[in-house]
Image 1 (cartoon, rainbow, N blue to C red):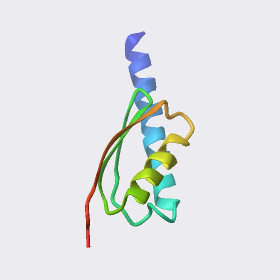
Image 2 (tube, rainbow, N blue to C red):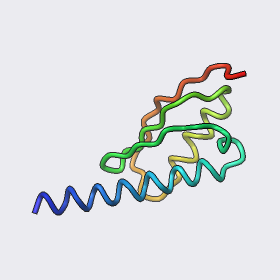
Image 3 (cartoon, rainbow, N blue to C red):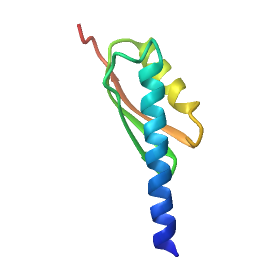
Image 4 (cartoon, rainbow, N blue to C red):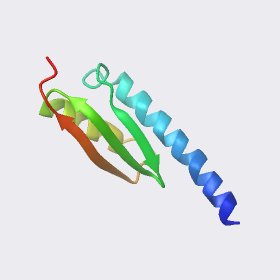
Length: 82
């Protein structure tokens, strides 16, 4: 039974990851950034680099509002990419 639940969670996490990636790609502020998204048990981890605090906040906001996301772990680094 625990194996089935682990498989179910893995599938759900994969769907959440795909939805967050899609949402970030569709958002006009975050679309041009290569933000890494990983999900474990509904907890989404965002990592990578963005060049402004506005993009940073927007990425967190976008991820938080995807259905199924329980929490967002922020590992994004703000640095001048220009």
